[in-house]
Amino acid sequence: MTASPRLFEPLTLRGVTLPNRIVISPMCQYTAEDGFPTDWHFAHLAKFALGGAGCVFFEASAVVPEGRITHGDLGIWSDDHAERLRPIVDFLESQGSVAGIQIAHAGRKAASQRPWHGNGPLDETDAARGEEQWPVVAPSPLAMADGWLMPAELDRAGMDEIRDAFVAAARRSDAIGIDVLEIHGAHGYLLHSFLSPVSNTRTDDYGGALENRMRYPLEVAEAVRAAWPEDKPLFFRISAVDGLEEGGWQIEDSVALASALKEVGIDVIDCSSGGIGGGATAARIPRTEGFQVPFAAAVRAQAGIATMAVGLILEAAHAEEILMAGETDLIAIAREALWNPFWPRHAAKSLGIADHYETWPEQYSWWLSRRDKFMGR
Image (tube, rainbow, N blue to C red; front, side, top):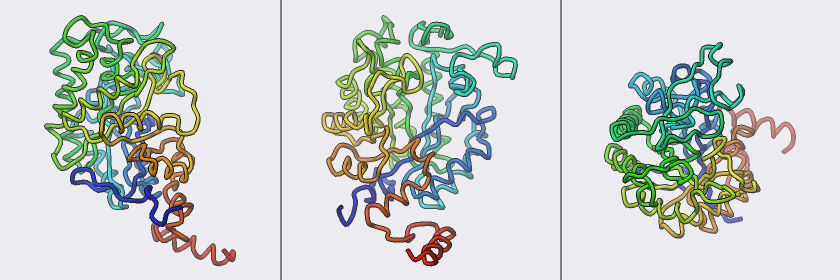
């Protein structure tokens, strides 16, 4: 293994330097109250900063109330919502992590149940617990699946309103000290549903040809970039493929989109997949370790833009191998971080740059180093 692993090299994006290449991916907790964070969110995110991640993302945060996936989603549609995130931002940065947030609109997948309540459209059972349906919107009046809500087709005024809500969310994020912003354009949510021919059957300038289907997501990205500080990086999450048996969004479409996003000032493409016709990441793609890395590699090589790889990257040696091969620039860890919030600290040790607890918070290193001494390690 190299003396200075790539995984622990800093990465400067515009005026922001991540201390290492490990990013905690946005992970919905479905535990917000009217869009506001709870103590759970503080505890959930704080441990990743203690664990040594270079960047820690808040989960998908709705830019309007109707853009939530569930009643438990975080929101950033008002200044009050943003201010309630500020203490978490401050703590993340006090521990050396860069704070990031993903801003989102769920589109036709809004008004859904929390996963542990069924993960389907809200129904009378949910209404009985005070979680009622609300109207949903999409590029075309096509339900996500049988039994799901029929969305209203967005008109120009509605599209402008949502674009402006993304812009307002970006400004609020900057105001509370967040340094990395990601636009959610994946997993079947609103922007992805404009991109995919499966969900977009419009006949105007926003449907049909690839150029037209990309038009609205690019308008949102360009408007957000103009509002987001020039010295702060902007990410865009994509579903690199729909992963359907036939048709849908393909990797070559993602390369074209990434090239266009680069032109409007996007800095990093976060490469996920699936979700157009099922759960958040549902796709008929075999799930082996690092199964989405080839998407990040293809986009990086063919569009000439930095990428972030995510999806079953479980071991530090594997993450290092991916980076050294030039397949991506950042490694996003999600469920593995739930299993082991101190994954970055353990990765440093396994890659040979921290023999003991040099990189750990002193409140932990003092105790752990003495335990090792007592045990003869």
